[in-house]
Length: 217
Image 1: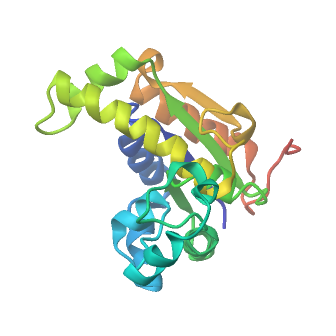
Image 2 (image 1 turned 180 degrees about the horizontal axis):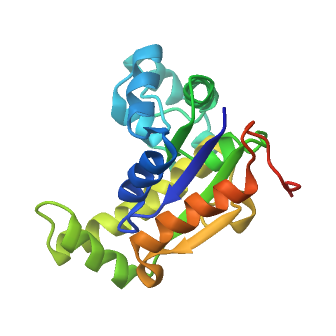
């Protein structure tokens, strides 16, 4: 069964777009549930999964105190470990299981990279300019004023980059066009148009048996 990944910046409308695309195609949505499923499997807190970092036990932190500072990869603090392999494998397993269980729209969690080997997955990115995304957040998110939206946007953008790079490597970035077959500026196009374009593009690119009707580059 085929699927769609949607990478969305804060305030770009990714959640609403994912829900509406899934509804039109008869798919389910897998978003934050990825964190909960991985956390349950690995016996971790959801915030550890969300950041892509395990926390160290006291004994591990003590042992790490004797390691060279250079081993602090990607700016991790003394309470985290750099090896993300277990988290990455678990997250990818959740995505693969969701696809096997039926058509799925996967929102976030670097799904475009995690599923890059799947020719039956359509990879989309939605984005917008900073001021436009702030305005969207103020209008659509509960209890968010301009100052809060600006702060949340900056933190979210940094966190997304850290997650991609921590999980997959320093050369990986969520705005890199090579990971996507379709990128949409939601502020300029509007959510209705973005939903229509994703559904139409998916329908054109993929045949009924879930295989791409065009060569994947």
